Image 1: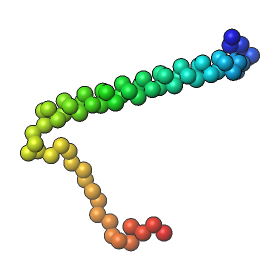
Image 2 (image 1 turned 90 degrees about the vertical axis):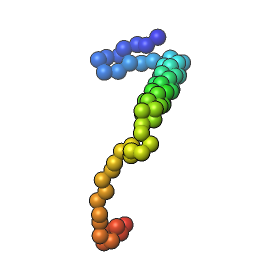
Image 3 (image 1 turned 120 degrees about the vertical axis):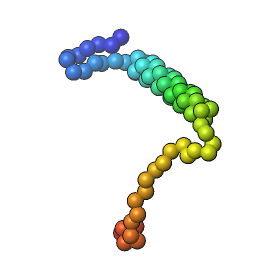
Length: 72
């Protein structure tokens, strides 16, 4: 049983904490699975309507002198 100590904190036992943690992990896992499935569906739509002669996207790149490329 979750007990409220004051307006800022709750006291729970280890078993309750463990159950809530496992439930949270299950929800997180489900969200990740659904996200990957949604991305796959959208990628399939993109590839189905894509003309192979056209580029999918573009990316602009900046040119830098060699002096800027040194790590230290």
